[in-house]
Amino acid sequence: GLQAAILSVKLALLRAWTEARQRIAQRYSTGLSGVDGVELPFVAEGREHVYHLYVIRHAKRDLLAKHLACQGIQTVINYPVALPFLPAYARFGHRSEEFPNAWSQQGEILSLPIFAEMTDDQVDCVIDSVASFCASNP
Image (cartoon, rainbow, N blue to C red; front, side):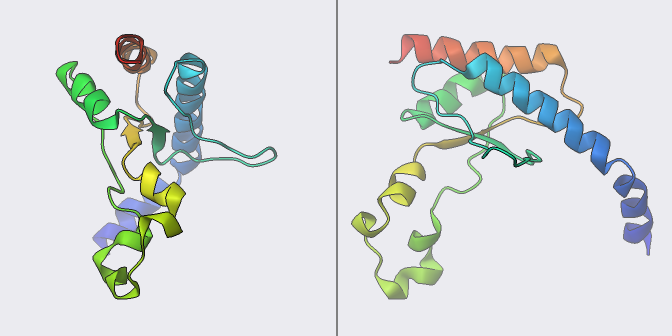
């Protein structure tokens, strides 16, 4: 009952929170476009993304995450192991060459901070920190 009451209040805010995350994601995409080594999320034309996560790819993901942590920016690797390589699927004996994209991307994906209350200064700080890392780590 208590959870339902809390969620019913939060539900009214869902659209505003989604729009805020979309605005932040657009700011990230604009600020990080053209930064060497960073692959941004793709959204097909005519589609909309809610940006529960803002996930980028970088070949030196672990070094980038460490660099950002040193700047006080928390990142997350939400899916460190791709689905075909999870222990639950070990019985199928999947090999990396069967799923080359999943295999390579599991070591490159990094979720940047995104939440509805992020300020423009916070977003700019993340963008600047990612860009400075990429400039010094080609």
